[in-house]
Length: 177
Figure 1: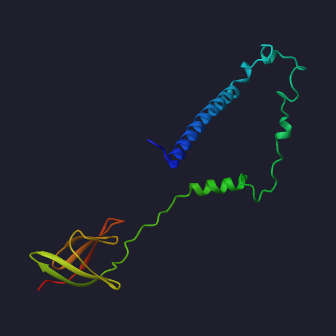
Figure 2 (figure 1 turned 90 degrees about the horizontal axis):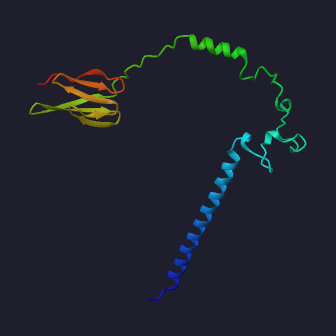
Figure 3 (figure 1 turned 90 degrees about the vertical axis):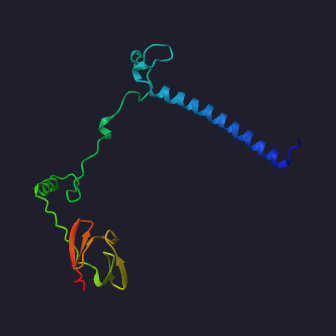
């Protein structure tokens, strides 16, 4: 079976991908070894002669090793109390605010958005026609329109449930003649 130039190109790409994968895996292994060596505790390191590092003389230690000037790391406190986030005055005000009881506003049931337009009775089942703004809808028991669910329809009234509060609201739809 003779290979086309396209098949040779695919084989070359596969070979290069395999080589790149092997090369990456080898480099990752070396990087992991370096990270493990750097993570060892300092007390377990030894100098080149095999002696523990703590026994090395001060002259043998490199300059700056194990010497840290802490005074240079400290910063002068910020004197701008107006913008100081950790100022005592603000902390006291926040504590007083936290101690005050939280008054929740009672959610109110909104007024019915529907206007009664008519009803139809078919073998004991009622279909009620409502208008919502410019839109007309026909509903039966169990239907949901927006946040309102139709719970019950009788000849003289309709019970709607406002779903967010689970509160029932009656809507008078007149007597059946």
